[in-house]
Structure formats: structure tokens, C-alpha cells
Image 1 (cartoon, rainbow, N blue to C red):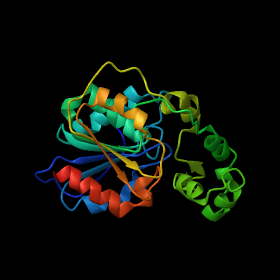
Image 2 (cartoon, rainbow, N blue to C red):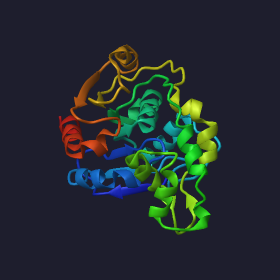
Image 3 (cartoon, rainbow, N blue to C red):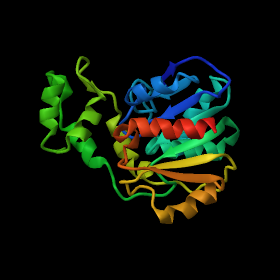
Image 4 (spheres, rainbow, N blue to C red):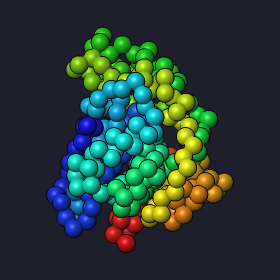
Length: 252
């Protein structure tokens, strides 16, 4: 079972399952989960090979969807689901394979297509850091700066560094081995006739006009919206706007 953080109490609404992206964790979504928990129960998971969840050699989207289905089954059998990036693909796979478990689907800045941008360079950078050597998070940030110039990216990755234990809370070997599957998308002969919102950052190029045909092929009831001034990490760039859009969609 995935490590799951439960925020808020059960209400008349289905619980909301939050599914993070590659190299993330439930911790990244803590502030958003707390805000949304005023009206419903919120379930934030660490995906396999991330955070405090079990490690596995396999990291395919059917695997991830099955993990999410297990969490939903343990919390009533049906949920609203919001997934970002890799988590959005996992949420889509869940909706396509077990649509009865998903009340409303929200996909944040990703499409059901294969992408060309591998993230192996970030794995190489994290492998180049020796967390067992000790030191502070600031020391780790300085050590990563040469390979990862962007401060925001370093800060995001370092949330998965356990300085006390001297280890990454990421299964870097499995994520590296499965990278082609993570940035890809499997052939799925399915369609989910459920309410689906594809919410993108206006400054991101992850969800393009040419992707809409593929999206509607899987989700004929898909709707589309953009958050101005937000990039791929739209929930971090514009958290208030992201929460407002999600509330409007879920409460409609």
C-alpha cells in the first residue's frame, strides 16, 4: 500500500486523491491538501519509488494505476482524483482501467502522449551527490548547483533528500531504468466517459492543441482550462489560482 497522508474529515463529497509527479511526494502538496480539506477528506500519496512508499523494480503506468486503485478501495471505493505530470498519467490510466473508482478526474499539465524530454540528467546529478557524507541541506544545494543551475528545481529535488538518514527518498535506479516508460504512454484500448478537466499552465508547452484529439479519444467529456502566468508546476507557481480552479470544477 502506498504511504498515504489523510487530511480533513469525510463529508458528503467523495475524498480527493492527490497524485504527485516525478521526483515529488505527498509533502509537496501539503499546503494545497490542507486548504482543500475544509470541505472534504483529502488523500495525498507517495507514489511507488518515492517518499515513504515501497520500492519496486517496475514503474509502469498500469503499476501506478493499480497502486492508486488500492488506496481508493481502502477509503470508500470511489474518489475525485487530481494528478500532476507523471501523477496525471497515472490518474488517467486509473480512470481508463477502473472508471467506476473515479468520480471526477483532474489532469494537471500533462497529456496521454509520449514526450521526448528525459529527466535522466537530474538522476545523474542526484547520484553525483553523496548524502552519506553528511552536511546540511544548504551544502547539498551548493553541491548540486553545478549540474542543476535552476534554484527552484534544486529546491524541489532536495525535498526528497533525508539529510539525517543520509539517503534519497527516491529509488533512483528504478526511475532511471523505467524512464522511457515514465515519459512515454502505453497503448490503451479504452475510453472513460467521466467528467475530466485538463488544467494546464499557460506558460507550459506540455499540453498542446494537437494533443486534444488524443485526449478526447480517451476522455470524450474532457474540458480544458489554463492558469495564466503558470508553467508546468502550475500548483506551485499559482497555488491560489490552482486551488480556485479545482474547487470550481469539483463543486460544480
